[in-house]
Amino acid sequence: MAKIVGGINVTHVPYIGRAIAGNLQQDAYWKPFFDGFPPVHDWLDKVKPDVAVVVYNDHGLNFFLDKMPTFSIGAAPQYNNADEGWGIPTVAPFKGDQDLSWHLIDRLIEAEFDLTTCQEMLVDHAFTLPLELLWPKRNAALRTIPICQNTVQFPLPSAKRCLAFGRAIGKAIESWDSDARVVVLGTGGLSHQLEGKRAGFINKKFDLEFMDKLVTDPDWVTQYSNEDLVELTGTQGIELLNWLTCRGALGDKVKTVHTNYHIPISNTAAGLMAMETLG
Ligand code: DHB
Ligand code: FE
Image: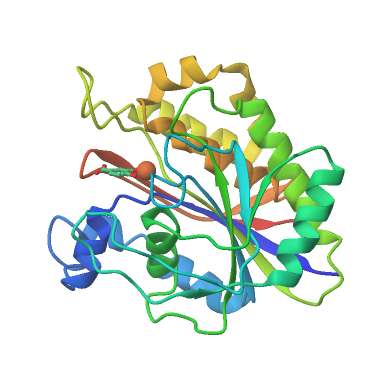
């Protein structure tokens, strides 16, 4: 059966694409952010995942406000990126794994998560940038599965629902008849608000507590409604639901491999957190 080696949660601010394209990793603005990654690269070299299941939110590239599935999954042989208007380079397609996609679809719908299946799916910065950050030299052999959650247009799935979805994803991966090693990613967050009176809002205290609780007690997050989470973390800080789903897939016990937290990148508190599954 397939093995989940661990999970990585990471921010996905589009501006990062400019830093990568301009080779600005060692500039004063970017260094504290990019310096978070080498320990995670070392861990990835050690655990050698074959597949990355990426939990993220689409921002209007594949789904727009007229059609917004709560949960959706790619089942394509490859996933193309396209210009979103952020001024960052469009990157080469990512390889899919249709066998795992359809296994996940079967198991998740059986588990009463009625997700939308996408046999074509464009992937936006929330999918591409984390992969570029984690595999800066592009691992051409890595297969990927995009899983989108709606964190954009209310009503959004609750923290409780996302954690349960993540747990179902974890069980489904582990029942896949394959010797593949799988890493789960959750992208977005942490606290940020891009518009309105609270534009620029960041809540370091909550973010750090959230990162701690994610390891020791992820159910802690479910005490909060989505309105609470928006109040606590900003309108786009709610992308932390993707982190929660990723954590759910990793089983009861995890150990922290490495974390980094840096304020700000653009308008966002940039978090990074790698966790290894135990048992
Ligand atoms: C920013 C953050 C995001 O999560 C996003 O999707 C777009 C922009 C930002 O901070 O600029
Ligand atoms: Fe975002």
